[in-house]
Image 1: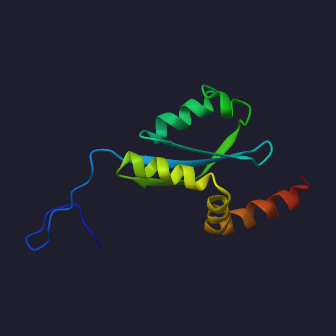
Image 2: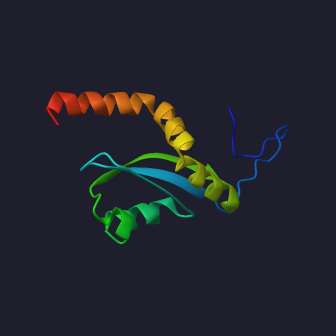
Length: 112
């Protein structure tokens, strides 16, 4: 197990000063997804929740269903772009297979 403490025989683990996050929101209204990236995930989710983003304003309420972190902004932008492609959406579908099954079963049980 990795520790952030410096041990006598272990090298110091250096954390980057900033992460860039790729995230996916899912609308509770219609199940549609929004993919974005940010350097402050908590603030960005609050902005979406408060209706400050025109794109997601009408999706509310929504759930954060996935996020990844990158240490380089260009990598995060490239990943966001990829996840918005057909192949990227397939990847997310497979990556979140259990989530998709669970929510599908919940919708069937509730009659939605």
